[in-house]
Image (cartoon, rainbow, N blue to C red; front, side, top):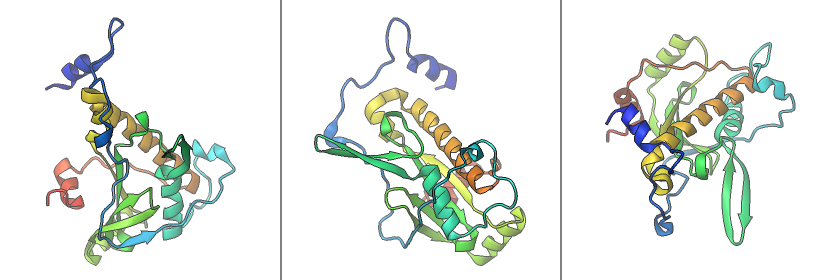
Length: 216
């Protein structure tokens, strides 16, 4: 199925809305949080209050914040962490820094961190890094030498079922929309620390699948 045909078939029209399931299967509601059970977890610190909101759009001038596990925790909290919990009539749900259609949050975040010699999943619920794989020192050194600085690679993925549960065949649209929200939120958080964010387009889906171990 082509992108154009999918767009035409799943868009709203003046005389009718796009097709949807028409109901919500509450017994099979997707969990908006993914957990990697049995992994070693690194609990992260929360961000400090940021008062100069102009840095959201204009990166902080001068020396960037040094990279550390503390600054990484602050960065992830402001980019993709939880901002609040809400409750009404016995129901309770989380609100995150990055907005999501229907608050379904199909986007998951993974990191390759040379200084920690590992590949991690970021859990916003726990505000922690869950270690999925070790990163050999030789690979860590090559990454640091290649980029010329301490840093990390951030990978965003989608779980389409979280959106399909509510939006049916339009789910792919909302997955892309939420990815855009997450990228923008990551950019804002990086600006607050004076960090540079670069889009890496040399890695294929197959490369990312191997890095994250999704092929096993």
